[in-house]
Image 1 (cartoon, helix red, strand yellow):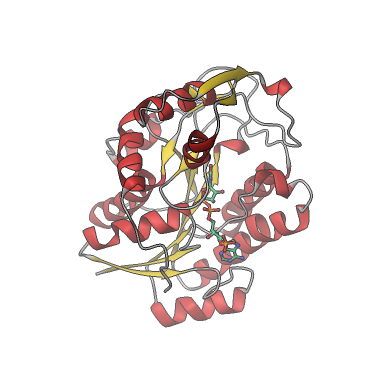
Image 2 (tube, helix red, strand yellow):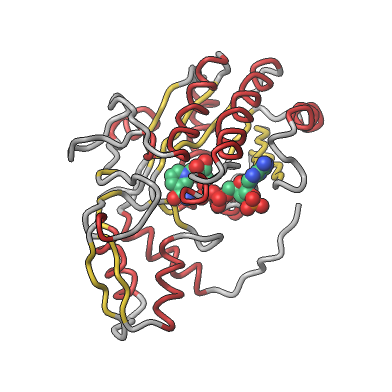
Length: 299
Ligand SMILES: NC(=O)c1ccc[n+]([C@@H]2O[C@H](COP(=O)([O-])OP(=O)(O)OC[C@H]3O[C@@H](n4cnc5c(N)ncnc54)[C@H](OP(=O)(O)O)[C@@H]3O)[C@@H](O)[C@H]2O)c1
């Protein structure tokens, strides 16, 4: 039986991993949220490993408030860089593999082409730099690790662009959305399945982990503006008008990449994953979101 410890279990990705866990009968998952394991507490992290002896840690914990990070550099770096580096060292010492999630924000390319994993990172802003430093710390540790860079994550759990649009759609007649940033929306549930499938393939084919980096998003790309239009269309909401605005008209402390179009070729060819189009994933998320659900999970 494969044992996997998931940190940050109450976030979008953590919650979707929890939702899919019962489908994987050969895997024993342990989910720990911030209350049960604050990843800044490195001693507790090691103790947790020594209680559950996982073969793998999926680190779904992170400082993800991109705007707030600009005023809270210290906490963003403590969590996304220092704590992640410490986790990697502890994983190495205890012979546990670390599957870490990073962000398209580390790339911030000057070009419009698809972004491969070889595209040199040029992170801008505190969040992006803290995530990139976290990656470097993992690689420096020599831990057996994989880093998966994802983009535009959304879920029926937590806060995200799709849910913001759904809320605005209930009360507003107009909403302004950026048209000149293009990327790949990623349904956290699809990412969750992909991570587990990577672990299963690692086990069945004895694949070595050596700090390799992979992109993961749903197939296809779209602007935030077109994404918003489709969300309202799928909800049959014709009461709201979506107005296109450019990045320069939208006040933000954070330099946001105009191009977040991730190439998925390396991920698909290495792991044999079938990745569905973002429009199909969005249908499933909206169906999931419409269901009544128990939001009071605690480990
Ligand atoms: N969201 C996106 O659009 C996006 C895009 C690209 C990459 N990513 C990356 O994808 C990963 C998952 O993102 P997500 O959207 O699922 O994030 P999320 O919903 O913000 O979840 C992060 C979780 O980490 C927890 N956490 C915060 N501080 C912690 C600590 N000290 N110890 C333990 N847990 C802590 C949070 O708990 P509290 O809420 O209680 O603080 C939250 O449950 C992250 O690495 C993120 O950087 C996200």
